[in-house]
Amino acid sequence: MQGQAARRHPARQLAALYRERWEIESVFAEIKTHQRGARVVLSSKTPDGVRQQIWAHLLVHHALRELMPRTAATRGLDPDRVSFTETLRSARRSATVTPGSFSP
Image (cartoon, rainbow, N blue to C red; front, side):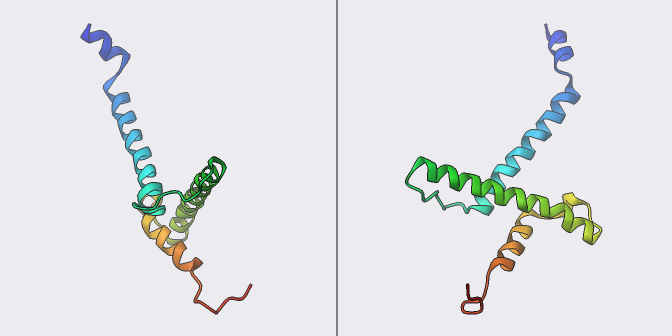
């Protein structure tokens, strides 16, 4: 019985899947804890509004993740060495305008 399980689920494949699992957990943490904020809840009062906010968070996350390998390439770094939280902070700084300096 034990031999059958080992043949069906080789250790290398299980180890690779375990690593993949933690990668997605890291993405969830990026969105829930770092990007959105640990104590921030979705503010919409309607299902459509909540869906819109969720999509907005996912789009921002995707944009930041697209920016990371580009940043790495311009600096000659391995993309895995670029921090999500530093990319988020940098994006927030660049999107923040001094009050009164921008007039729509």
